[in-house]
Amino acid sequence: TTAPSFTVSTSPANLATYDTLTTQATVTVHFPLGYVGSVQVACTNLTSSDGASPQGRRTQALLRGRSDPTSTTYPNCTGSGIGSVALDSASPANGIVSSSGGGGTATVVFDVTGNGVGSGYFTFTGTDTSTSNQASANENFTANEPFTIVPVASTAQIYSGLPATVALKVTGTHGFGGSVTVYYSGSSGGGIN
Image (tube, rainbow, N blue to C red; front, side):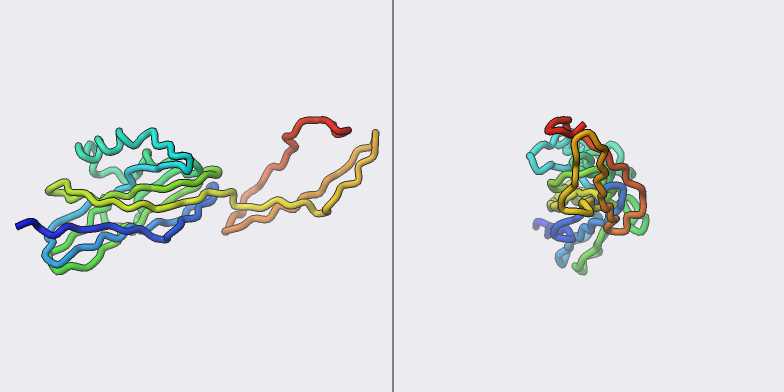
C-alpha cells in the first residue's frame, strides 16, 4: 500500500518586495489522513521573469543529497530584486513540520528581503525527511524600490546660459524611512549641461 502523499501551497498569491525591506512568504504543507512523517520545507530556486535560473540544477542536487539540512538561508533564491530568503525565526526548526496521521496543515514562514528591482517566482519544495519524496509550489514576486519620485512642477523653465533648478518630491512607501540620493544620469544635449 502506498502511503498518501502531502502537497504544498504558497501565499500570498503575488509577493511584493521592496529594496532593503523584509516581507514574508508562507508555505503551507497539506497532510492527508494517514500520512505519518516529517517534511522539510526550503526555498529551492528563483526564476527571474526572463526565465533565467542559473542555480536550479545545483539546487536540486543539493536537496537530494541534503548536504546541509540545518541551513536556514537559501542562496539559490537570490537575484532579480531579491537580496535574501531566510527561515523566519518563528518557524519550526530547520523548516521541518510533522504529521502523526490525522491530516491537516502546517506552515513555514520565510523572510524575503528585497535588493533592487525585478520579478519572477520562487520554487518552495517540501521534502519527506525519510523517503525524500517531494512536492513543490511556486510563489510569484515583484521587487521594487520603496519610494516614488515625481517632479514638483509639470514643466521646468530653463533659459540659455542661466542655471535652473528642477524640484523633485521623494516619498517613502511601505514603511521606508531611509535616505535617497537623486542625481542626473542622462546625456547632455538639447541645451542641457
